[in-house]
Image (cartoon, rainbow, N blue to C red; front, side, top):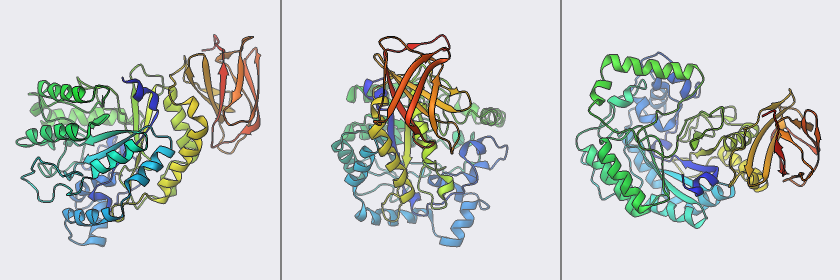
Length: 474
């Protein structure tokens, strides 16, 4: 993995498509709950608003009921007009400034999602749909804004789904294979991704679901990308088409696939894509690993249960400050990055207030804790819990160990905490990154930290420990 990516720790995903205009999805479940279901139409109730068009294919879905009430028989494709009109209100530099202030080191923009609409004026023609691309170069303008703000720029492309070529309804996980387009889509997708590489040289090439060519042609495409961007990164969703693919679409194979996905999600593992032959980074979706991973990984999720803007989401559906900030620390301690999604509104190209609030929380935290995040690596243990009082996570750089601590209770305060994994030495020292006082001393139970002011429940206190040792308790 390139050092820049391992050092980054925090990225911003942006889902902003014509589906951001109706912008509705049910909020009853997270996606993992639906993958765990044995219903043949479980994904009709997907919490992802960017799946709006797919959900409309199920007449009894919550989205279909919402659409009938608010839009009657209006065709999904007509939302392209609303989305393009709203571009007059779009300020790409304002978005980039917000993301940089939040502490993001890279931004990944959705260039084409499953509805097939492209956010750049592609020279590759789509003969199956009119209005399949934006006449304005949204990708290029945003790339310039992101890079001017000092961040890396990456691109998402839906290689495995495009409803303008194949509109098969997605009810279960195995339907993802039935919906993969064939025919002229194979050349179309390859040509479009090469065009994106040539025009924008993305630092991240983030494919979704699968890839329509065999492994040898995929390898040629990836080689083309690395030659253009030697320090580029690809994710783990380039699952190549093979001669066995039709067999996976048979009823017995689909039953087995759905059963395996249900089992994994019922065990609480969430959605972790299967490893394809070619990839750099794992991308668990709405899921976090329990332990330090040898392979670089990236948790990808929204602030709420959706990637695209969902007007049905309330404060209760969003990550709290406590959970969001701890997620950043937890993932960094396990050799991962957090790619957190922002979903702007489609009707006015603005970022909703509940999302802006969370970007502000990240800004406040990373401006203090950045030293303990950026450029660090996992320690010998990610951390754990000290008795019933405190949660802890660790990162390391050179001879410095960083300890993130917070009260275990959501309404608690933390005056002191014992770190059983850490041993104090005569040359050791300690300091708080927020400027507060910390007294450190070795005890028979581990390193004792006395904090003044105490740690509160929402914002972790970060302590820099120099020249400490790993104790036998690790």
